[in-house]
Image 1 (cartoon, rainbow, N blue to C red):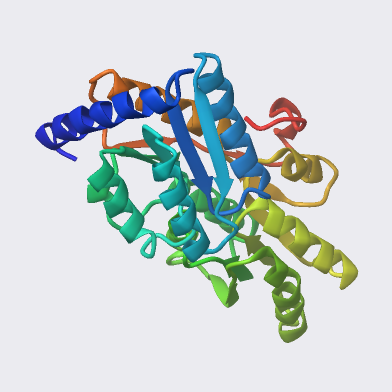
Image 2 (cartoon, rainbow, N blue to C red; image 1 turned 45 degrees about the horizontal axis):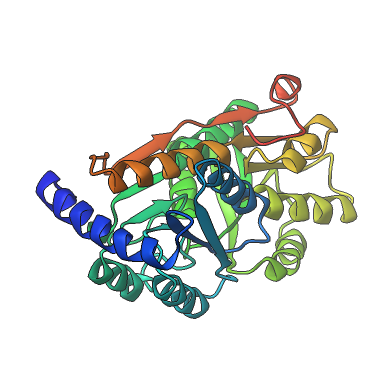
Length: 308
């Protein structure tokens, strides 16, 4: 958004906020919806937002998208009806959320897009996420370092989530021009599809050196499948997230590595941006937060019992 558009957006949002305060006498009201509120990352992000908002005496209404864009679109309509002044959005489907971006714009509600990008960024106030390309690249660079003569890689990804698309992009960029090759890949949109796909990949491929999962929840299931298949000596499972469970697995010799991001930092930055807009200030169109590769060598310094 350019400055003129942001100013107009902000003015409209403040007017909408004034109406919402009439309905919510206790203060400002914000909405949060994510693709999956059973995911520890999204829970940690929500909790960071809620702590910052409630510290100001304001309210956060949080509703799960349940990995269904139709459901999440209904959720956003409900949040608009409840008089939210800003929406923190982690979309299920980057493209199919478009009608609700338009609905928020019509209602003068700024959208703070977090973690996974919407397709049309012209209708959001800002996009805040980990540097997902860099996270994938860190994984790929570690793979190349481990296997300088080449290796076979299998991948479980989610093409509907832009954050995951970017991670895969980074991974592919890092291995380009090497003999490290992706030999099999499966796409998922729900967690209940992970185990079956992991088992199918393991059955179909006799020679796998690395199995990469789109996040720690997925990768821990992959790790379990690898262990059940008796192939832990052969296959290194590498992930993205840096969740407490992921880092604990690295420390215990399960996952080989995970590129750690910080849902706490994303949540806190999102709230900061929302208040800046409501106060009539300007924000950047995008914020990219750094990630750190966690391995057995540095996991003790990373704090396995909490998100970064």
